[in-house]
Each structure stands twice: as C-alpha cells, then as structure tokens.
Image (cartoon, rainbow, N blue to C red; front, side, top):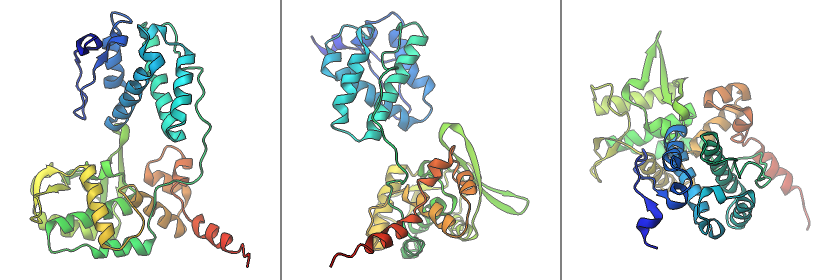
Length: 328
C-alpha cells in the first residue's frame, strides 16, 4: 500500500513548523476522527514543545507493530497500550515512558469525550513507578557562576548580550524560553523599582523584581544596543561572527549553544545547559537563608516539591558523609 493510502492531507500546521499528518488508522475510525485528532494537539496543548513531544509519542505508538496491524483506533484495547508501555520501558527512562502514556491517555480521552471512541483504552494502564527527590540538571556553585559571568568579554554586543541573558536566568530563576521571549518593554519600571515581566508556560505572566547586579548588566547591555523600539526583542541573534546583533529574536537552541561555549571557556567542568542557571539561582538563594515558599513563588512553580528538586544544599552533606566510610 502506498503513502497516499496511509496518510491523509493535514489541515492544521503546528506552531513549531512541524505539520501533523492524520494516519489512515485515525481517519478510518470515524468521520470526525481526523479533525478531532488534529484538534487535540492544536487546541488543547498550548506549549509548542509539549505538543511536539506528545505528537512524537502518539506517532511512535501508532507505528508499534500490534497497533499498526489494526484497521482503526476503535480496535485498540488496553492490552495494546500495556504491551507498548512495557516495550518502551525497556528502551527509555521512566519519565519518558510516563510522558508517552500521558500523551495516549490525553488523546484517547479527548476522542472518547467527542464521540470518536467509546472508551479510553489507555485509562486503566499503569505507568512505571518513579519517584525522585533530587533533580538531575547540573548546577553551578555561586563561585562558579560568578567566574562564568566574569569570563564573558564586554567589548562586543554579543558578549554583553550573553552576560545579560545568563544573569537573567540566574537572578530571576527564569526559564530560557521566558528569558529569550522577553521584549524590551518587559523591563518594567514601577514606583522607582525595576521588574522583569516573564511570559511563562501556559500563557502565564510572572513578574520578578530585578536584582541590583542583574540591573547593572541589563543597563550596560541596553545602552550598548541603543534600541528605541520597546516592542523589539530584548535578546537578539548574532550576525555570524561579527560580534554584532541582528533584529531576529535569539532562540533557546542558540542560547544553549552559547551557554556551552561560555562554560567551556570559563573552565566549567559540568555539562551545564540553560536550565542549570535556574537551579543555580534557587540553590544559592536557599543557601543564603531564603525560604522554600518564596523560592517557589519566585520560580513560579505550582508545587513546592518541584522547587525542592532544585535545592542542592544537601549535595555537600552527602559527599562529606560518604567520605567518612573509611576502609583502609
């Protein structure tokens, strides 16, 4: 059977540039199945990265041999989902498997509620047991973060941009997507105080007071770019290796590449990324007698358990304790 028989023309492009395709197994289920299938991804998932991850999870499930042999989604049973989860559990980590199961549950629940399916076959399926108390993202000590910031040259616009961006992530606990998503107007002056307006996941707007050291870096950077349009992107992409900046917004992937270059240059041994600065800021704040409750609010976390994952104050204690095991 050729590709035309397997796939149907898409009608809803994804915001990331990826165009979803309705597989034949979906379209052959119900007259509204294709539309509802695309609608689930386009209308119910606001975050583009989550949408892409869920699309990949569903596509992988539909390629799973026992499922690919079926004629429509209506033939899928809980046993198919269970076999799939057991199979991928041997290949991926527990968080990845749980994400894939969540994608299937969400899609099938949506289709069942809109009359495409009678029941949700993924509803009774159990995911892998997984609990964790400590995040895996590598972070920096306060001294390492200071050394990294001080290692960035300040005689070019790119250097000033990089220092300001890293400082935003450290001092405001901002996610990289929120940091690079800022426009100049998102630096707000109210009653003599400076604030950052961060556009977070799910369309939420979160405001954070600007740390005095961060304000210094931002002031120097803004004076250097001399931008008058307040709706222009705050952090822009570089023009090749000229040290100059263009008009386009810096994306998170280029920000990650920048962080890796800067970390290597500063002699940082850990393979840090954009998210490392969020953990660095939170841990440093807590080390200086900050409270978990305020850290949660500052990080815009829904649960203190999430904030606790960034708290690495116990790392040194654990290492010291282990070194007391002396077998000599």
